[in-house]
Amino acid sequence: MMKKILFLIAIILPTTVMAESCFLPETNPFMGKYQNQMFYGIGQGFDTGILLPPPVRPVPFYIGTITYSQPTTFFRIPARRNLNISQTLGLYQKYGWKWQNYTIPIVYATEDIALFRYHDLYAGVGAGVGLQAKENKRLGAKLVFQFKVSIGYNITDEWATEFFIQHFSNANTADDNHSYAFYGLGLTHNF
Image (cartoon, rainbow, N blue to C red; front, side):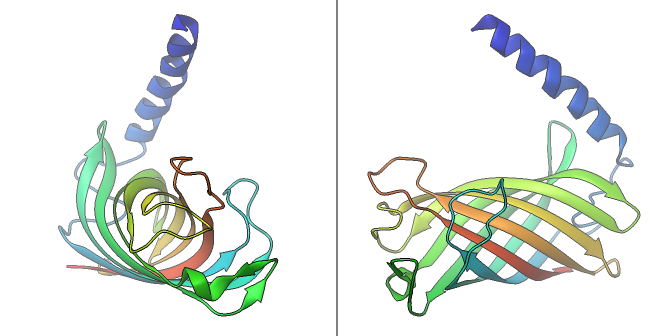
């Protein structure tokens, strides 16, 4: 067990130091000099529960998200903390699932960590926890965990666009855990 812990530290510490050196002091790739951000996004659902390999079977399941964010750091790496409100929308049956049964609002708190920045291009990963309005046969619990990978481009100091892959799961806290997965696009406004 101790060898595994030392191995993880040996990987994480240099990665953290390298990532920290990629950013100028007092800059945040997600938000620049601003202290507030709004994100507006939409996404297409996929019938898979994992991010890697990427989902490949689109389904009639969609998500709309509004997010409020503030800048922060994670072990001195630029980050942002988020309060998210999402609405899923299912339409008809496909691959054995009645997607209209999963039209459910979700509220969740997350944190995104910047992986790199190259001029106006940036990438990040995020995780969080929240609640969906009701249990269902796909997730089986109100408690949800969210994981996200995003790539963004700063159009101006105030506006950016982001592509994301997002995953919701109950982390096996219930018997049913078929999860939700989405590809999406969004627009951020810094103020």
